[in-house]
Image (cartoon, rainbow over all chains, first blue to last red; front, side):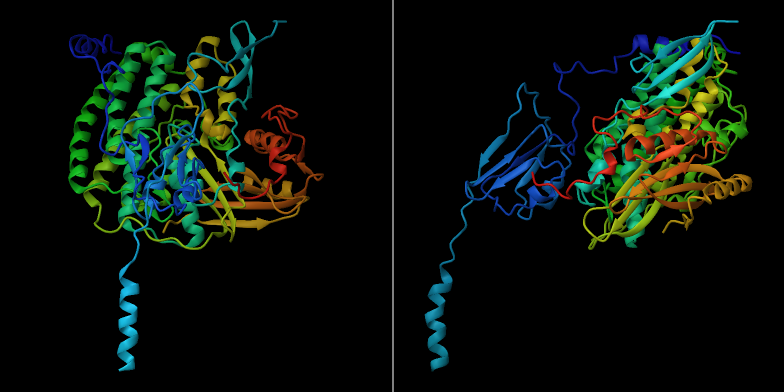
Amino acid sequence: MAFFEMVKTALKTVVSRPATILYPYQPAKKTSLTRGHVTIDESRCISCGTCQRKCPAQAIVISKEAKTWQIDRLRCVVCNSCVDTCPVKCLFMDTQYSPPVTARSVEIIAITYVKPLKVEKTADKPEKKEEPGK
Amino acid sequence: MTKQIIVPFGPQHPVLPEPIHLDLVLEDERVVDAIPSIGYIHRGFEKLVEKREFTEYVYVAERTCGICSFIHGMTYCVGVEQIMNIEVPERADYLRTIWSEYSRLHSHLLWLGLFADSFGFENLFMNAWRIRERILDVFEQTTGGRVIQGTCKIGGVRRDIANEKLGEMAQDLDRTRKEIDDLTKIFLNDNTVRHRTRNVGVLSRDDAYHLGAVGPTARGSGVAIDLRKTGYAAYGKLNVPVVTDSCGDCYSRCLVRCRELFSSIDLIQQAIEKIPEGPIDVKVTGAPNGEFFCRAEQPRGELVHYIKGDGSKHLVRSRIRTPTLSNIPSLVKMLQGCELADVPVIVLSIDPCISCTER
Amino acid sequence: MITQEQSIIPIDVGKLIGGVEQCRNEGYRLVQIGCTKVGDNAFEINYSFDKDYILKNLRITVTAETEVPSITGMYWGAFVYENEMHDLFGIQVKGINIDFKGTFIRTSVKYPFGVTVVKGEKP
């Protein structure tokens, strides 16, 4: 039977610093791997639609004709699937959480990827045709 | 003839982490019978197999519960891998084991805090959660999420932990072990705690076995079942002790969980020493065709995932049977004959995780 | 690989009580009772028992109108699974010791798991 077992711990807590953070006045603890929200580099996206197919919450919608990439931040569960499976690596995971909103809306980003034109092939072909003829 | 009155307990009660309803039949402050009622948090997870492919269903399975989320995802992955005969690389097995044991540590520390809160000891509640914060920091540094980890996938794991980080984790655990030692001394030796928990909610060994109790509820009554002995995910290569106690009251269940904290720390340190180098995943092609009952040990007991596939991308059936659903009949038996003031302590001693139960 | 041995034994509805009584006498404990919908009006019910980490399943195949006898006489804790099975799938179970009569899990659609929607969904 022990009495007053807690006194040592209680006194230690009184004199030491609090264990809590005064959020939002002090910023929240973050590490380099923290999953906050998804960002896109719109100049590299090729509109393949892989992120739309792999998203388990169906939060990403890509429109090839209108060239837009849209995400519903409230549906996104920040699972990192789209970032992992993007073939050109244009999606990144940022460490800040998305801010709270009062109305449901969808974030639309215009894709500015321009496919580079291949000019060298048409110049090579007439030369190649002449050589076998020789 | 004494009059019987019925008092509703829950779904909203300060001591309950999640909503469950019990109708207590009382005769003058002594509980004669208890009728449970669930269904407040039923989200219909098992119906989602029809809408999500089997590779995406990992995310759904993980979100069944917030406290034991990693083990849900891991059990589903192990089940599908058994059906498809996929051999997961060894390093992935060890990483899964390390994260599972951290999950068990944080769940038991959460429970110790809530248990102290149930008999009014708020200072101890906050101290237990202060230690738990450090474990959640480790989760965030290695996986990116404090509560939902999202690192298990079919064929292995999605993230690796660098060897220097593993060394740091092993050293941090020594400091955590000392703090947990101080904490459990209070739980097990203090007179006030003992007064509220000794001989309260007694469950005999035969009752525990035949009513289907699992986890620390059964081990506190002397039934030695621990699913980690079947050897899934690197547990076959580690030395897993099965902790039991013979009294069967709330104090024994607290004692079993306190001892499991120390055995988890030992297991993590063993796994960090033995982890080999190598790849962390294998490529998965095809779809599961067959059925399997995959069982694992959650902090609360035995988890069963029944998976049935027919060769297409969508599974036919995924059934999750969580340990709290199995412990509810034992709870009803324990409540018969106790005082009204002991009801919160007994309800919390089985560690109810109702969001797991309801899916 | 893990060593979780399991066996599935299909039996008749009439022989269910005899099979369960045999499991009880041999010292098995009840793990779960699960239901799967196979086909239009057919359900497979798995009764899982465990002893020394070896799983033994008894499987019966019923329709929505078949009356399944309750095993709560031998395993008192089975009422949780049988009520859940009734509320979600619509299986009629006779003789449960604590019968909630459909109020254990209250959903807005009655017997929701008994109907299958079209598989796959477009965003």
